[in-house]
Length: 94
Length: 386
Image (cartoon, rainbow over all chains, first blue to last red; front, side):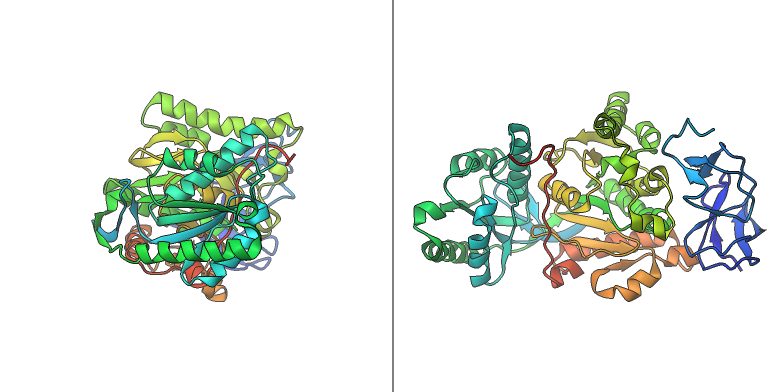
């Protein structure tokens, strides 16, 4: 059952459309096929989850565009929010 | 596509037939409100300014207020001044007459001789105006006469991928019908300016659009601030939006896919067809007001968490992609696009339905903000009051 929205096939995050508990499967459609990533945190409804591993300093894509840079290493299935994503000093993230 | 509206002598088209009472200065607001309370069906347009602003801010105030009065939804207006303030009768009339020849009356409290006499005179004028206005009848108008303001506020992630996507489709449809659609909220284009630039009709328009967005960010930087300290809001963040760029990329979806045919200053009268950009604020009410001052007879306002914002001059249609909000805050939401999230309906289907809904509102159907008599007012300014 699809419970997350992928907005662009290049995106590194999906938006969950239901509250997700740690260990739940997050299901979304990528390139026309159903994909699954396992949540490693509880994720509130409408929040973002990484669907790939992201390195600290990497650009994070949503809508196929840069929404900020990772301020920590982020693993697939992790909640992506203020604790690990920032756009304030776009080019200064170490 | 046709609807029934009011054809004004100045050439504008209205979807409402409002008689408006406005204080010429904030000091006259209480007296103007008393007049409005005594006559049924009057729109009270609050004005927080009128004095003690520098020349740059005074010009903005005057441009916004004269634009609101010139809006096609307005039959006529009574302005109630105090008498000693900076913007008085002659200044108002000069600004208004550049935009419209509709009935404008002005009285001042110091000249009339106090509160009671001003109220009595005001009631007399407004009653006469209402009687004249009641003779106006709706006539067949074309949707190409509609200027639709695009706005969002209290956004959550569903705004970006549902409500704004649907509104963008509706905007495209209106532009195809030779109507006008106005994207506003300059700070919420930061991070998406490259997309907007590519969509400009000419390289010059694209550059102007891009410069307008960058100027806004620089204005904050010059004050030693990062605009991201105030945007996204705490509520945006709690709902799942992390960065300003993420918010902007969702925000601009409500402008659809059409090319931008012009860039307007804050509250400047819109004189082009198609999709245009106005240099507005992220402060929702000040932005809604600028759209209506620019001529928008209707504002389509998307929201994720819900907001009651309304306006004295124009209906503000609330659209949400968050079904929970549509149910829980039902008395302030007009249109639910959450079927696009579940897949029950496509963005295209909902975009067509929203256009039909907007046509109904143009024909006279009240939106929730009108049912609840919500009227908010704010005007952007650069400096503090003197």
